[in-house]
Image (cartoon, rainbow, N blue to C red; front, side, top):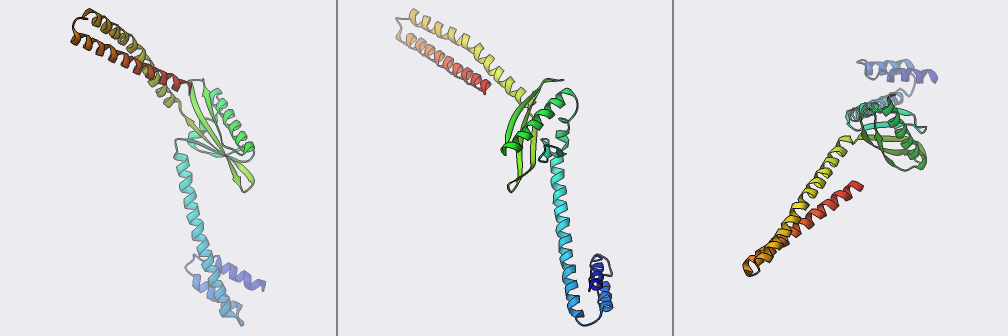
Length: 238
């Protein structure tokens, strides 16, 4: 009856003690009566099932700890929210965008807006946030809704500071533009000189050929520099 089940449950809860086997035997002896062998078999099966559950739970906890450690160590800001946009957890990289200073407050508002939009639309949302205090910086925010079947359970947001990458890109673009402008002038002068040289040596076919070749190569280089400049300008617009 109920007393028998209670005794067996008390025994099973002590599965990791050294007196495991003796506890089961003692419980069965106290229960007594027919069917003791069957009760012993059920107790052993229950004990085995709890052992497997315990090992499975331990593995799940290790995996959870490993995943949490990886998220905390990631240089990318990660925020997990519930369906109302309330932050449940965040890693160290994301904490600096959740402060009360002006730049942090602006970033926090934009991050929350992106999360809310992702939850409402059930689609991923990506935005770029420019902060001008105390130093200009650029953030890329990506919010992804989380669903459990047809039910929305919140969202995860990834925040990346791309300021340095944008600065390097701008420096490279400016360098290409400056070099291109600087090369166009001497190349144009070189082409003009080659044309003048060809006119001054009209009686020498070999000299005329060399001058024409020089003019042609100068124009070709000028066209190449123009293409590079156009590409740099196109990159600036993207």
